[in-house]
Amino acid sequence: MILLEFKTLLEKHSPLAYLIKPAPMTELVHFLSRAEQLLTRIEALLPAPPAAPDWEAAVAFRWQRDGRQARAGRLLAVAKPHRIRLDNLQGIDEQAQRIEQNTRQFVAGGSANNVLLTGARGTGKSSLVKAMLDRYADRGLRLIEVDKQDLVDLPDIVALIAGRPERFIIFSDDLSFEASDPGYKALKSVLDGSIAGVPENLLIYATSNRRHLMPEYMSENLDTHRLGDEIHPGETTEEKISLSERFGLWLSFYPIDQDHYLQICRHWLQELHGPQWSAELRQEALQWALSRGSRSGRVAWQFARDVAGRQAAKALDKPAP
Image (tube, rainbow, N blue to C red; front, side, top):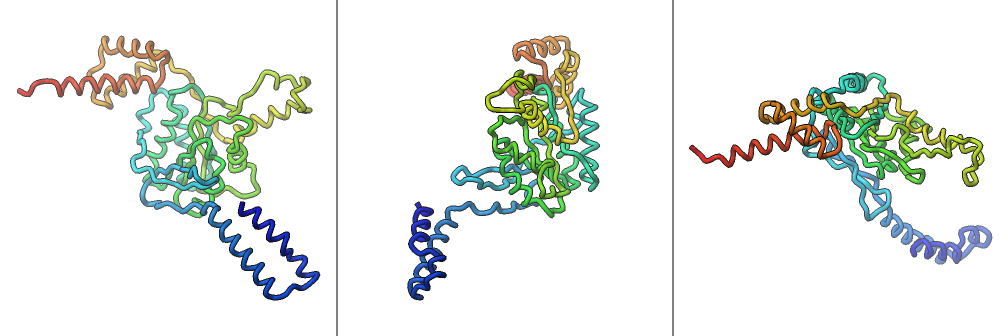
């Protein structure tokens, strides 16, 4: 409505017309006054630039968009981030060593790569990223979590952290895209495809169940097959895999076997001060995994929480001596 009013004003009082045929000063002043009023009203509808958070308030932050305004968001401090120690992650020593080395280089001010962690669910991908924050937060590392649908705001986030003394990891969990997702091109540009340089204090760590981050179809492998009006379908496939190639470090995670699963169960029972490991608990752990339909680090952790919680409840139920 305001834009229509502004258009009508311009058509009625064209600045070009004033150059050709000078108008009375009062009419020109009236036009400029009306234009200024309309611009003020338009500015009120535009989202304000994101304000910098209190960087001293936390070591982890979450980007949150304002649903009432398009492209309006801010960084919120996470008061109690999920802290997990690196030695709590069992059976992924090689992946842990590689991401820890990359993160250590980054925190020390050296060159490092963006990291893509892909593979089976519940195998410790996101926990490994959180473990990096736990290990290096006291050396200036900060973590910013950005949901997939908010990646379109990456340029705003980059502008907020540019020039800061801290080292920032932008973390996006369970990442995957459809062809129409707006965050796809924003992430691609920040990774390695924009004329604007990426700040040296920024890396992107992302987890996904897909290595190529976008769905691929069997028909795309047939370069001579016509896909709608696409003349070169093979180039479409190359476009889809180009995003994951912009991550310099790939870490793959695989489904765990039974012995690995039981090892994780034992570890978490010790961490949670649960009962001593026994043949009965071993059988119970296997039954727990069977009921969940999978063996993973997440399932093992849930089993240990259940057992340790039941033990604590029994202790409370005992009558006082």
